[in-house]
Image 1: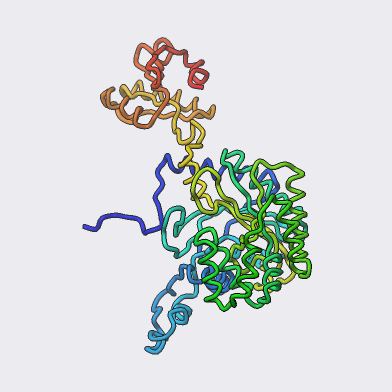
Image 2 (image 1 turned 180 degrees about the vertical axis):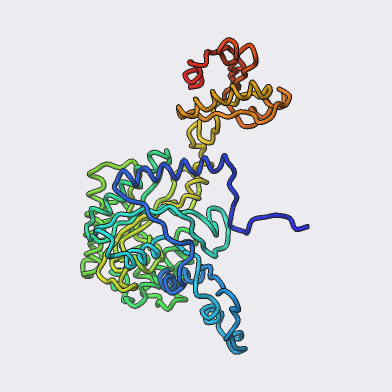
Amino acid sequence: MIKPSTPKGTRDFGPVEMSRRNYIFDTIRSVFGLYGYRQIETPAMENLSTLMGKYGEEGDKLLFKILNSGDFMRGIAEADLAGEPAALAAKLCDRGMRYDLTVPFARYVVQHRDELQLPFKRFQIQPVWRADRPQKGRYREFYQCDADVVGSDSLVNEIELLQIIDEVFRRLRVRVAIKLNNRKVLAGIAELIGAPDKLIDITVAIDKIDKIGLEKVEEELAERGLDQKAIATLRPLLQIDGTTAERIEKLAELLRDSETGSKGVDELRTVVDGTLALGLDAELQLDVSLARGLNYYTGTIIEVKALDTEMGSISGGGRYDNLTGIFGLPGISGVGISFGADRIYDVLNALDLYPEQTGQGIRVLFANFGSEEAAASLKIVKQLRARGIAADIYPDAAKMKKQISYANALGVPYFAMIGQDEMAQGVVALKNMTTGEQAKVPVADLASAIG
């Protein structure tokens, strides 16, 4: 007999876990709505032509590809089987599971452009899939909660998105650091070290600095073709310290001869000053090593880390100036953020930050003494539900010990009993399952007694 299990990197979630996850989703959804974002959904799978080439070389390797339907081996020659795996996959697969929500959103904007009023503010809460190696905080199936604005170049959007991040984590009671950088700054750095053609190689490598350290990053840069002089010039740029304001000024001085780099610094200064002027609970940090290895970012880059527990990025995002151009609609700028719901779930579990009643189901369970008593109880159950109070009745006239054990197992706060005497008196025998106290409560007062 095969032992049942889930694929590596995926998880089941029971009722308690789902209540906690819905608390996260509901919190994020309510903040998105507060800022005027409207919800859409896109399919779980996209055409591979939509996905490939948008996430960089390493991202493309992590795409889950779907075999073509029917005889997928038709037209495949023996030479194809002996050739490059990527070339073979391209012939076997036309579709793939979405890697993120941003690229499908760009496709959506182009496909539905005649229906949209720009600027368009949308949010999406859906699962994505990555063929990654499962480890702590890294899953093959996980939820993202995205908010994006397209059709506006204004840096007001970046400031607003940082306010959204701050508000979400304030409500979740998670202390975070928001790290900022700008892709133009990275392009300026590439110019400064004499390697403008190596921007992608530089960003892919330095994006790993938190995971593998500066020394390993420098080794990877050498493997990617940067000479030792360029690496030595890059090193102090990655080690800029001081307050955020001091780091910006140091960066401005270092990049003063790069038009692109200077523009990136100016954008950073505008976003930082505008955000701090509105107030922020989170720590705001300039991190020159922050690259976010996705090729479509062109301006501001954002990454969020929890301060009180070890975890990777729990939110991130950035500006992309022409992502829709690859789908035939050039010149549409956008900026967005994404909350990693699964990592946030793990952080809240680690720090025990859920509200006391999260995960609680019904408030009161009615005992079942037989058909007549059950009928009377069901009428009251319906009244309670009409008032928004979660109530239920044990389905069978089982022994009372079994019914009470069931209530305890579910963590039900109140156990209600209606026998012949209670029916005659118009009351309910109500037991507080926490204190053990029991009292007869008039039916009219029951909702207030349950609270």
